[in-house]
Image 1 (tube, rainbow, N blue to C red):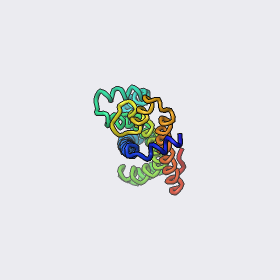
Image 2: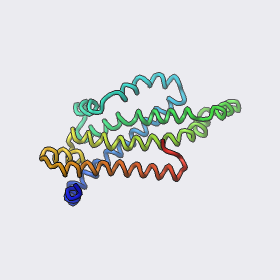
Image 3: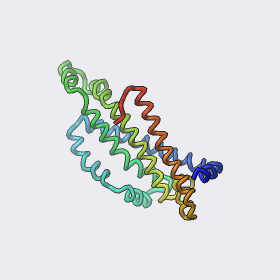
Image 4: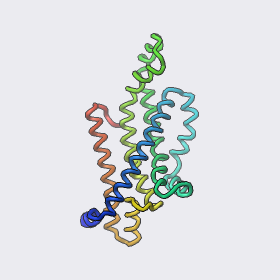
Length: 210
């Protein structure tokens, strides 16, 4: 496998595929964090909004990733399919963590803020948001790892021109088992690297990831 990895890493095709997959993964991660944080924060603040959003989030979480990818293949170009599938799979994870973080705010501080007439926006900014930050780091770590996995799986099925998943599928068709493992190992390294980055951030800020 190492020799196959060295061989493919020496080709321009590999670097184009790696760059395209990284861009898709980062795009999916960014959209998932933005959408999930907004929905999670609103759900943590408002029980009514949480009740309205819960059925949709439950359906999304229960949907198999393969079904999402196959539906996306009907709607989107091949390069967009992995990003869409990763967002659908990752943003509910972010939303759940953010909602839990917002609800973890000290109720005594919130009561004190209300009694002193502190605006809800200021209470959210200075009380709820700091309480949610450790959960946000945990959500980001989970979301980025999930994004890499779903993006590569989506690439295997959608076959965009430049993609780790396309290289993996091409090696499988040619029965190049060692090359399949080599392409897969790159995806594993991306997940491991992202985990290490968020663990470092967590240690620097003294926030334990869950």
